[in-house]
Length: 374
Ligand code: SF4
Image (tube, rainbow, N blue to C red):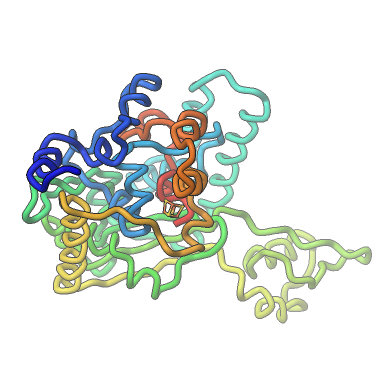
């Protein structure tokens, strides 16, 4: 058995991963797969890493200490990646349609594709071409852009580390004040106002803006549902079906007019469709005192995460585990099974955020594979 002094010496000369896996899992993977991220090489922290740490320390360990993520199945780029390109062009006063076309061209030039893959990418571009005009009708903006799609870095108090993140934009609102701007393209549901009140990332990104000389008063959080309204059915007599379909009143009314129907005859549909919304804008106002509280909270998380004396343990939430991309790895490791084999077959080295963005496939919705399902 090692003495306390020997253990101390070992801690000083080895990484946690090497101690945890004395058979040098890292070496083996490195040899077979090339470089694997070593967390001791970088002092930067992203919100994704903090989020992984808070969701499950074991998940953080797989992703940021061992440095592995599930192998990606080649898939179409997300609606968000195209949507952000369109919104950025809008903010800059450029032709957003041309920006979407250019995005599609870039995507199609990345590699040789099957027809199905080409169609998937075209479908994403078409969806955004359908969403943006409806969004502009819902919110005819009068923002003055100050920054669009900007990366930031701020030091973390008490550590030689920096928080890195990306702002969608900083704008001047109609009230003349500075606001952070966030755009999300959810597939299923909007985040509620309460969800946003508790969102630490919003607070911390606001703090970063203050630190870098942009005294923002809050965040304008725009959510654009990543789908288009369904078309109502036509009855045999030429009237429009009054059945509830996934659409909103403006789209339904437009369809009525197209079919030569009088919207006044269908007024009850306005209430019937009131639950279906495709856009939601929230103003998350945070005075500086609240922003500081969120920042202190973030600092504590980072201090814990970077502490040399931290403990790694698994989540107790079956909901979190049920959707975790490392589930199979954890199942095997608790049984003392062959995790090296699973890692070799099902995982790959985690890329840095820059590599993700420059490579492709990064989902600006934050669908980091390490936190997917969180
Ligand atoms: S399966 Fe559960 S315990 Fe294991 S990493 Fe995922 S969330 Fe954590």
